[in-house]
Length: 300
Ligand SMILES: [Zn+2]
Image (cartoon, rainbow, N blue to C red; front, side, top):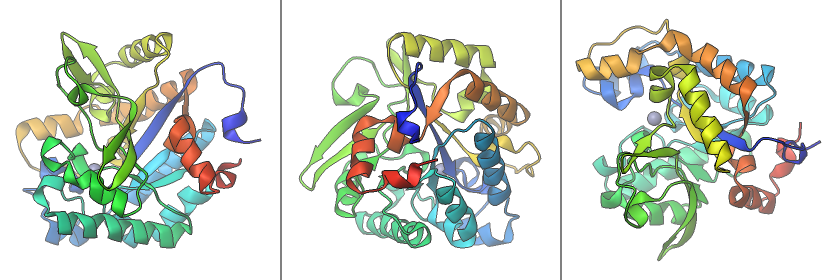
């Protein structure tokens, strides 16, 4: 039976992971320099495999946005995730924020990661998520380049703390973007409207900050409205043992808060709600994969 054909009472939410090392997050760039990355102890494979095992306990698949840098160093991990039926998408190659790159550098980064991932899994990789959701109004050019490089959907626009009034700036959920290069689907992480602002509630930071009961209440409310959560976590968020790095105080608080609670909360979440990868839970993206003949790979 195909996952997509299981009769579902509950709406299926999206679970996604940005696969990167704990020292590659933007908050620690001043202390973990790019040139030192290969000398720092790798934890990403262990942590990602832990997540894959946990997901299999709950018969759940997810989308993994994998960094090309990580895929080069851990090819078996990427192959195994794909073989287990998870969706592999691109997190770019070197975890450079979009606005710190020229268009040519960005093109090279997204092209390189796509090739590395496709070579490993032997299938098209059509989804992209920028480091730290760094496609904004000042880097809109990036969307055209993604289309030109063969990406069919993007998940990099996160309208955090935007006003709920207004047009494109306040969009959330799944919608189509039109450019001179063509069209692409945008799959934005979920926000919650409160006090005229879009609060970013879809990430691991909020999942770790608030008690599970808060996340559960939010999801129940979303389901009542017939909406779908697009959630993202990082493998390092399930790793309370990771070495502590020095950095700005606020960054340290954000990064290390409640790391020991993520796994249990994720278990509760998977027990209480139904999750699937982007290429199954979001109809237009599912259609793209069906068009690519890719759905057969998601059969379990
Ligand atoms: Zn990232």
